Length: 138
Image 1: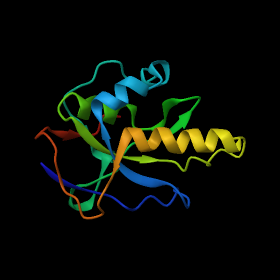
Image 2: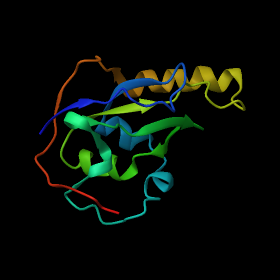
Image 3: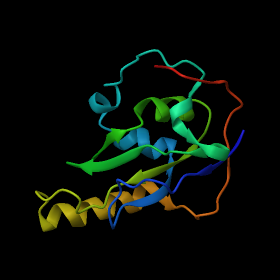
Image 4: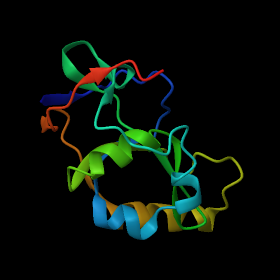
């Protein structure tokens, strides 16, 4: 299944960026407790219809860094499913200074960690996702 990445995320703010996240780097730095806090613990080999817009435009997970760990705004299930098939997935990282409570030191550390975890994502990049059914998972 060939997909593009949706740029239609009106909730994003200046400084939030699209990236390509490597599976090994993700699992090394993810906050496991946060990642495993999903509505469903069983990951069915199915895409949720709400993960895509028209013409297979994928809505990537939205992540952020806190205390040196990758945490989620949304997309835990998407991430778990895709990383069972792919070594890299498109994601959005909130700006390292997104938290109004982040100190200057935290912002610098977050920028550094993001730089180690991801690669820039070219705007027109297409992805080959596994051919799985698309359903309404509730």
